[in-house]
Image (cartoon, rainbow, N blue to C red):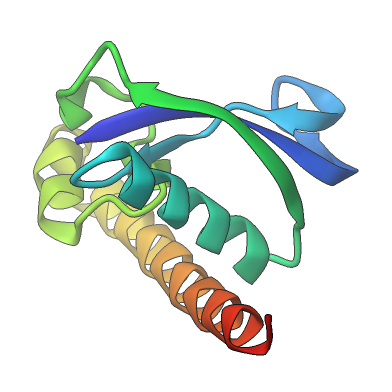
Length: 122
C-alpha cells in the first residue's frame, strides 16, 4: 500500500520543488503505516539524512502506482509493482528508472542495518 508522510529533518536539505527545507513529504510503501514509515526512515538514514520526527503517515489518495510520474521513487515499493507501473514509459526509460529503484533499495537496506545497529546500542 502507498502511504504519504511528512518528515521533519535535523538539517535542511535541497528538495526538488521545495528548495532548501527541513520538512519533506515523501511517498512510501508498506503493508501498514509503520512499515511504510520504516522504509522512509531507512532511506533517509541510509542517505545520511537524520529524520527528527514523522508527523503522520496516512494512506495515499492514489493507490495505483502507475498513476505516479515517478513510481520508482516511492520508498520501499516492490520491484514487480514498479515494473508494472513503468511499462508505459517504454523499455529504455523503464530500465533507467528500475536502475534508480535498485539504488534506492540498496540505500534502504543500508539504512535498515544502521537503524538495527542503533537500536542494539540503545
